[in-house]
Length: 317
View 1 (cartoon, rainbow, N blue to C red):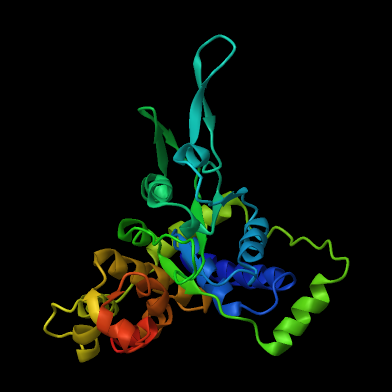
View 2 (view 1 turned 60 degrees about the vertical axis):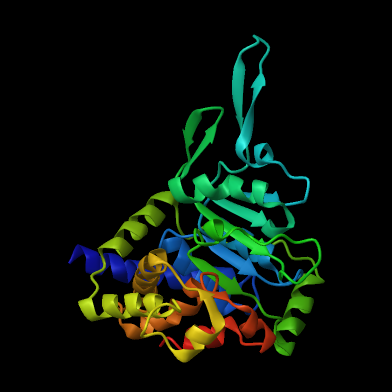
């Protein structure tokens, strides 16, 4: 019964959190939902959109409402790994002292992550997977909860570097941001061209976030839902005999086992957000695009025929 009470409490606080975020962010409800699902599932999120769509503001607002320490790293072509992780320096006693970099925080905003070369992008790999950092042979643990929310400009723009596949797979979600609707843009302009010092109230704290992350892990899942999640992942691979024709014709590489794990975790969180005590197939479908979008690699035929990755994913349902 305690878990049921916790789910009810979680649902109420989640609604309070969304209401507080909505006081700052106009629209983008689906984007905010996806980020929060990722956070409470213990995953990282990649936000993709052109500059000026309030990606940084969304992350900053969410971190404030969650009561977490937030640091922003602006990725540029000359950024070095030590600028992210930290480095050893000589102190006044001529002893080496480790100065922590901005990666030591609860929420890291890796802004325009694809503006820097792969060597620097990869500096986040250990932090994202192992929740630790190794510098000069010394291992330093990161404080949990720990999330990387990275923003990325569309890869077609000049001066960008594709993220390595190994790093892309570390992100639970890839979320696309579109331009706001006309009405939403009117509200944005009205709100941002006046004096506005509003800051969201803190709805969560570190202990409650960790508690709810543990709760998500305890949510039961029936076998047919697990099998459905795994079937979606396996059918995304063109070598699978059961794959749809769209996959066989337009995909070079499909999703790996981490996609199946993330589908289940995200579906659990999505179910709890909506007051359910166990996820169903609809919850898997609700998170499938965000989980698979960056894990399925299109081939040249898909690019030539302008086949979108979302259309390819829809063929798996």
